Image 1: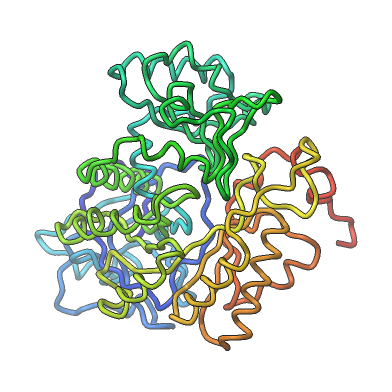
Image 2: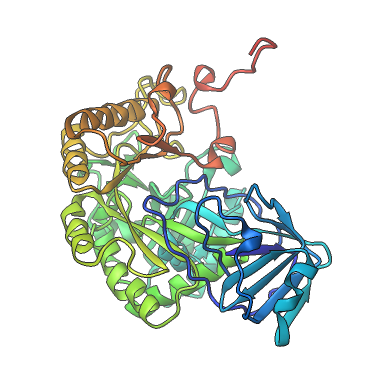
Amino acid sequence: MFLALGINCNETKAARAMVHFATKPLHFTSLHSTPPSLFPIPFSIHLQLGAPIAMLSSSCAVADLVLKNALIFTSDDSLPFADSMAILDGRILRLGTYSAVQDLVGSGTKELNLGGKVVVPGFIDAHGHLIYQGLQMKQVNLHGVNHKHEFVTRIAEAAKNTKKGNWVLGGGWNNDLWGGDLPMASWIDDVTPSNPVLLSRIDGHMSLANNVTLKLAGISNLTEDPEGGTIVKTTGGDPTGLLIDSARKLVLPFIPKVSVEERREALLRASNLALARGVTTIVDFGRYYPGESVELSWEDFSDVYQWADSSGKMMIRVCLFFPMETWSSLHDLIHKMGQVLSPWIYLGGVKGFADGSLGSHTALFHEPYVDEPDNCGMQITEREKLFNLTMESDKSKLQVAIHAIGDKANDMVLDIYESVISTNGPRDRRFRVEHAQHLAPGAPQRFEFGQILIRKKIEVFSLSWTREGERRQPRPRTPSG
C-alpha cells in the first residue's frame, strides 16, 4: 500500500491491496508518536528485484485510478520519485510523469490531482496487539492522563455509566505523567463501590484492581505471589490493588469472556485506526501477556482473522505470532497450510517473555533500580524452559521472538539464541529480541545481522530515566566520537 499525505479520507475508495509476503518479512522499527495526516490508498506493487518501476505496465490496460501532480516516493533507485501513478484493481500499472501514464486513462478512470502532496509506501508496525487495542478503544481510556484527579474522574465517569456489578475495564495509564506515584485501590474505591475494576498500565505488564475485584478474586494479605508475578502490598502486607505480570491471572477468570462478535468488531476498529495513521501492515502478537491464557491468540486466529479473511473484511495485512508454549500447534498448522494463508495473513512465528517492563519495575537488570534498591526486576520465564522452547521452535523452523527489556534479560536471551544457533546450525532464522531496551556493555556486538535482530521501539526516548540510574543512561558523545 501507498499513502498520500493530506488526502481527505472520502476522496478515494481504491481496490484493496493484494501483497505477497517475502519469506521473512516485517523486521522494521515501529514508531508510536503523534502521526502525520495520512490516508492510505490501498494499492500495491509487485516487483522482481531490480526491475525498473516505470517499465511495469500493460499496453492494453486501462487504469481505474490515476494519481497525478504528486511527489511519489518509490524506494526504487532507477526511479526514486514519480509525478503520477496509474492503478488497476489495486495494482500499480505504471509510475512516471503524467504523460507517461496518460495513455492508461480511459472514460471510466478516476483521476486525483494531489496538488504536490507526498505519496509514500504504507508503514509497517513491527510490534502490535491489534485486537487487544481494538477492545481497549471501547473501554476506559487513560492514555495521556497526567494528574491523579483526572485519573480518578475518568474512572468515576465510567463506573457511573456501567451497570451495577458489571466490570469497568480499560487502561493506558502512565504514572510517570503525574510524577511517578503508583495508583492504589484506595484512589478509586469510593467512586467504584459496586463495580469490579481492572485497568492496565500503558506497558501491559501491570494492572490496578479495586477492592471489589480483590475480594471477588480472594486476594488478601495471605495470598502468595504466583510464579512470574507480584501482588504489590503495603508495608503492613495488605494488597494495594496493583497486580504485576502473571499475578493478573488471579483476576482474569472472573472477567466475562469477550464474545466473538466483540472481538471481530475490535479488529475492524483497530484496523481503521491503523489505516488512519498510515499503517498498512502489522506484526500482531495477539492478546498474549504474562498471566493471560495462551489459547487467546488461537481463538482470535480462528474466530476473528479467518472470519475476516474469508468474508473480505481484512483491511490491513497481518503477520501473526503465537505464544511460544504452543509452538507445536503452529508447526502443524504451517505444515498443513503453509505460512502464507492469504494475501492478508502470514503465520510469522512464536513469542516468549524473558522479563517484564521498566515502568512496572519488572525489567530484569544486573543491578537494582535506584528507587528500589532491593529490586533487580523479574524473570518471567525460567531460563531452562525458555531455552527448551526456543530450541524446539527453532528445530521446527519457526521464527522466535523473545521480549527482553533489562540488560540481564537481554544477556540471557542472547546466550540462549547463541546456544541454539550453535546446536541447530546456520539457517535464515532471524531470531528477534523484542524491545532490547537496555543493553549491557558488549551486548550490542552480539547481535548478528540475519541471525539475531533487535526490534526497537521509540518508547525508550519517552520513559523515565530515574529508575535506571545515570550509569545506564546514554552519555553525550565527545567530539572524537
